[in-house]
Length: 410
Image (cartoon, rainbow, N blue to C red; front, side, top):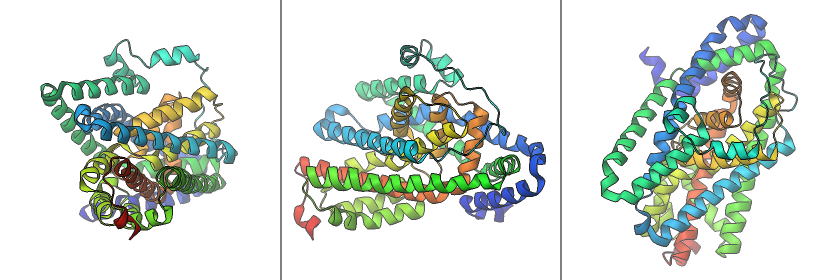
């Protein structure tokens, strides 16, 4: 058993996926007899999602520090981080609408389900404010949970030392939920095996070819975001700096992020290159970069947006403009509390797809279906996250007069 846990989780999941495809091809519809394993895995994910989003979102807001002490530095940093995340999710949604990676994929026979009637916009907006926060937690109303968690987090910031006991409790609770999440992810190889075997057995192996279009959409989106948002808008027009010099300086941190799939693991390298290669002075690097590792999830947001649209297309669920706005808004907000660890996007996309009304069984099938490409794309989108952290840090340092142009040019 010890040797099993010594193998990297992504390798175990990949092996389970390959085995699941083989079993699905051989066994066919008979794979439905092992569907309960995948169902159990999805129930475990759903068990974790609500408390994970709630406590990590509060902890993420509290980690920003006292807004009155941060002053213009904090306001600018938060505004840019949220803006670049919203830009990323917008790029992802546009690409998903154009490339339509879910068109041609039919999950209806594997997980039949009725398309829910669209909720009027006014009712949907009102539902964001929970009449009973406890009931919202119990019902898994993600948007209401996000709203209440943000209020709790901001209130703890304004209370200062008086709110410290609750803030510490939320921080400990966040660590607790991350530990439980780690345990749940140990079940992922078995859940992935069941989910992909059932999908292959009921849909045929040709359905997996749609993953290529999905992967291409994510890759194009990540590259476009780096060039358009960070390379052109922020680095060139606003700061008048060379995008080439920036990406050359950020290269080491992006490579570490790519290999570890963790923004936190890459944080020491990010701080090093920020000061030594990008000319960002310590007062900004030590404040903006740790904050970015917590709340800046550009690549993850882009990925979740594309997968959400893919899921809706695969289940033939029509998405209105309101739904697209809902995906963009909920992804931007939930990403604030997303753990900077490998695989955290699984829980984020589960929350977002739940927000647009997808059934748990539908969410489970989509998650199992994309497991085959999640790890390499996770590596890519983490690199985008780190590039965004360094880009925003450079912008803030420039505006705050804490930027050394000679180090950057050198």
